[in-house]
Image (cartoon, rainbow, N blue to C red):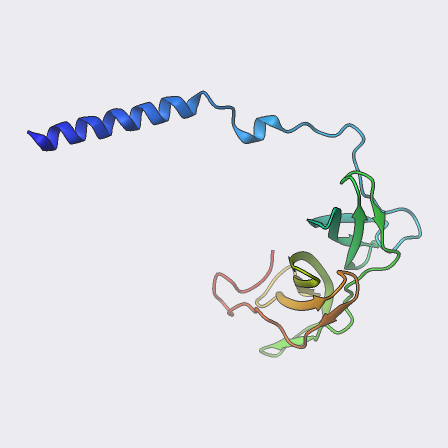
Length: 181
């Protein structure tokens, strides 16, 4: 019966594939933790001295470019740093995206006051087009509906950004995407 022969070959091919893949080392097994971590941190007196997190790194024209969330103990903003080797970083002196220009919003009878901007995602399109989507979080981030939103900005150098008015993504009250962490 030709159907049984086909199934047998298919089954043997599947078993061979599984067995041959099981001898390959998983990709995560090849990582080595860098002994001089952290490679980026805030220092007293800097705008990001309390925390740095949520980085997004791109390798563009021989330069590692990083956008990250930085906190001064009170507010999160988005910073920029560059590196020739991905280990030694030069940080921009000031944040590149701040809460300035992020519009407060109202949900029902509750005001949402912008508290922070963070979690940048940057896309680069040659020769010099940067686009960033980032999270704007309200002072009501711990509970309720519509606690965070997504904004959009564009740049030609990755440092000076034009922030577009309004929000590109908002949550749906009382739904799974209502906003928040």
